Length: 182
Image (cartoon, rainbow, N blue to C red; front, top):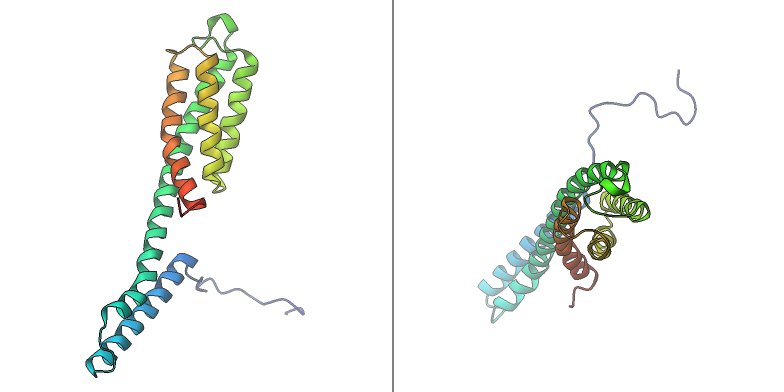
């Protein structure tokens, strides 16, 4: 017995819509194909004296869109790799925090390690939420601060520098996405 507003039993074989990037790609591809076909027909009938600029006009948006998809995919792949490194670093940071101050190879203070743990945790969350630029900038800033405060050759400091080096391309890619003209 169905109540008002109850959609009834749900069919498990319902199809889900394709993701937006796939739908947009197919739409742009369809528009490009129709446009190029129309240009070809008009050119072959002698209505258009040249076809090149008109073909470029229809194919240009397709190539721009594919470039944006490629850049976004690269950004997501690099941020996913960085998240896994941050998880490992967070565990090592926690081990260092448990040691007494005199036994730490990094010679970092409790406050410095707590701040670093908070930045690492927040950066991991930001990367998971798609805020790559702010997460990567925070990691680079943390590495710069820790490099000045912690022991330079300590394994924890070296690993943090390595993570910051992995985050720097994310900063560059994120800035290109934010300011495409630069």
